[in-house]
Image 1 (cartoon, rainbow over the protein chains, first blue to last red):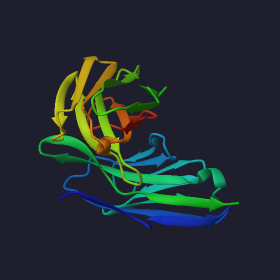
Image 2: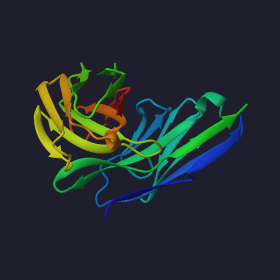
Image 3: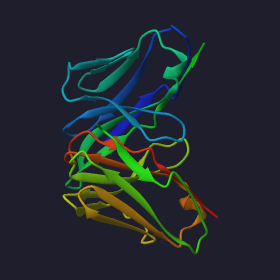
Image 4: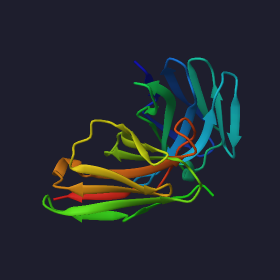
Length: 112
Length: 112
């Protein structure tokens, strides 16, 4: 069964304290791994798509990396406005259809 | 531009009401999705339209009825909902079903 596990469930950082979020996955035939940021009561905001092991993408203070079994979202010198829930999802073929399988998310809080 | 719009932003309805949620995108995407999200949970797929045809129905109760009038519009018709249907309803779109999905801001639904 295709699964996505995110850790930790919640993370509290001080402003400027760098850290990483983890997304481990088991899927037969990875078609893509996606990172989204979601603020309370709003829709997920697309951050990155990764397709193959070794791939890396960066945007401002965020950097996403991918291996054959997991992805990391590295946050460098975070600011309070980076506080949000970060969702990881993998594109999987289930029952003959393409679907996104989401992890439960990591809630990040950055204190000033 | 990666904007998906949804109306209304908030909706309160009784269990005997009929209402509709609307979603629109002008990115030329040919796949559109409805998700349901409960508090502190990841989005849960409900329906997928690919080239204006329903391709996935995740065993959603018949009180939810999707409609795709054209390639830019997606509706979700609601009838005789239950209080447990209260949630954030998200629309998303992508070029094709295997590509990056972009989410709208959601409609917050409360069923009384």
